[in-house]
Length: 306
Ligand code: ADP
Picture (cartoon, rainbow, N blue to C red):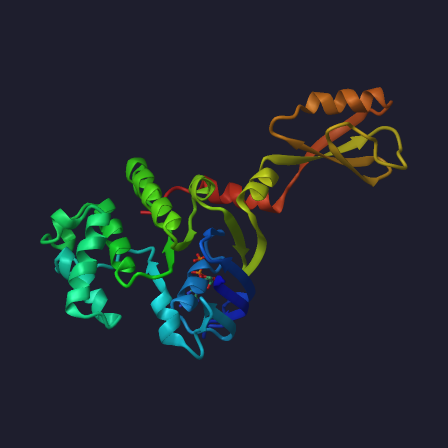
């Protein structure tokens, strides 16, 4: 069963901005999935459509088999969302904030009370239930938004930048919690600017850029790519085929140029030695910019938001 199936999704905002240009994305049930991409890539728009806050221009979205076009209420019931911006009512009590949410999903007062206790306990906020939103620390506000999103027991939890601006200790305890609920069966999709976060938590990853998915793979494969660097070497001698260097992937670009992929635990000296042994001399060398690598560099170099 797919938790999320997005097909050829297009969103053009009224001002003409094409935020999504035909997105295809599948997230299997039980997955822990990272949606990565630079600012303005279309992540929030995509999440907005899945959670019916944004109307799509065309394409289809199904959540656990329920289409947002033909079975919107079921689709909505399957999803819980934790937005990027803190959007709790600062003057309402913690308890009211979660029980009000229950009302939107047609839960009875009794169900709401039971779920409120369970969710607030789970996120260590039960003792703070009488406090108002403004009395909570930043980390508690984020936990409260998670508790609120879990009230109706969604099968899919979507978190938009859940730990932006949160200190490392709170980040780690949130990771722990997310891992637990994923292990208990909740499918999780998160967007993040922290590669470390995605690496620690997620099994699969999609990278979105300019409204299109540019990469979709398991996390280990993406990280392998990330750990490799491609060098372009200019040779004094002309070659008709790529030289063979044991352990390295070498490609001939033209007569005097080759590309060599070097992983972080390999050694460029070995490449030079191997070429030299084959009678080839390197005249100059440069990095080949790798789109994925660049994308990640941009992502990981960013300062935390807030
Ligand atoms: P991300 O979440 O990856 O940063 P967004 O989905 O917020 O990306 O934005 C994708 C593109 O759509 C950006 O160019 C952004 O400026 C534009 N955009 C987002 N929301 C609106 C809106 N309400 N009206 C017009 N353009 C928008």
